[in-house]
Length: 564
Image 1 (cartoon, helix red, strand yellow):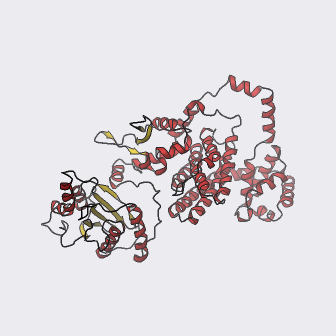
Image 2 (cartoon, one colour; image 1 turned 45 degrees about the horizontal axis):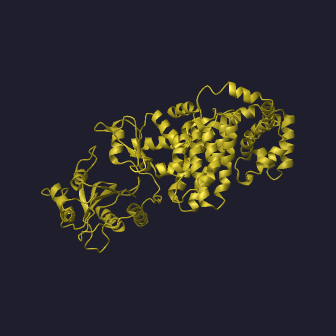
Image 3 (tube, one colour; image 1 turned 45 degrees about the vertical axis):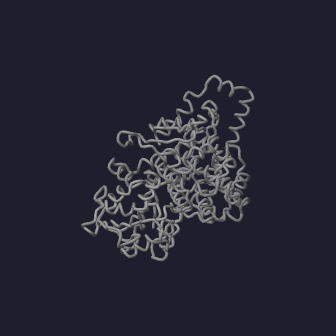
């Protein structure tokens, strides 16, 4: 059961909507199921002599008295509105049951506490099988305004109790950190325009993806504008500094003017202040140049993501929350750099994890600097050199599952569900991307004598896990990866011991795959030695000075963002 609290300033306007045909003729048999006074509330849905104006006047009675006391100035935002909807698949509720729901919600939110004869006037209108609209004017009979602080949270809490008592589907409890859901008008507009998502939802995802990739607030606005999004900074009148911002989607207008959404209205962590915590002021010229080794950003990202799993077990909630936020950036940038059919799954995982990256726990962003920087490097890195992205997805899989467990242990139901959804998308993306690579590695497996030698190494280093690793269908692929690691300068026994120590193989369903991707991301020691020697001789530095990158980093980023 989902409540959705909002406020407005037109009693008659909302009544017209509630008792009208709806924007798509979807309202059927609108009528009042509960009210502050069933005998005193005209019902235009049941009484042909009752009018919308009569009902508005009765509801506005206390508002009008208060307006006269204020010298003709009407109290602001005096209309309180809360649709309450059952979940898909829930049973049919009678008018009597909906009336009980309305009375309990209106009491829980402080609009009309039970037994309070001075409470606000309100009605509950039903015009569809699966929901009602509770409407109230927020001036009491004694002229005071009701205490409605945290009314949305209190409505949710009461609905969780009602679900249990009424035998309805139990939804996840929130913690006031969820983004605003699109309004019915926004959804209807998207449908008319043939779009799958509303402008609010589209802007939110663009903002998250861009914030994940950029290194400064200035660059954040620059890249958003390159996507055709209008940006309107809010300037403080006294300081002359930016204090906030609003965005408008391309072509999204009302009466010829852009429809603006404030950053905090898209999501709490997209507010200007929250972004400044993660994106310090920095000029575009301060960004790092490309690294010599195209695999280096992928190695760093895999290490940082893998370390996040240990952070979630550390017991420091603020540090863990900071890493979850940075991990959300990593998912967006991983999708940004992906090629192939699995890209859609990675994008879906990043969108899902947006809800899991924040909670009521204040994040320690400084503690997650290494992960956030490694995540941003992915946005500027060359496209996946040699299948390293699959190892990164594999590491992200385990972090997403650990994040779901972390949130669940702290009672963050919505975040835990979002992390599980992200895990499922990552799993699907991994399977799409990994299976062809594993099959190719198996096809290139070394001859039997080499494989036998690797088996001996495995049994010597990991005797307790050897049988399970050898029984894993990915063992043949692992032998190829071991052969490549040996060519790159690694000792097979040493590297097996090193990567096995990073994760408890007892809990791994496919231990050979775990070892394979751990080894795949190990740097090429011989290539590193050659680069160090080249640097000492001055070759690399001279080349970099004479041949700077032909394409500016910001152009590459903007192009990638446009083609997500």
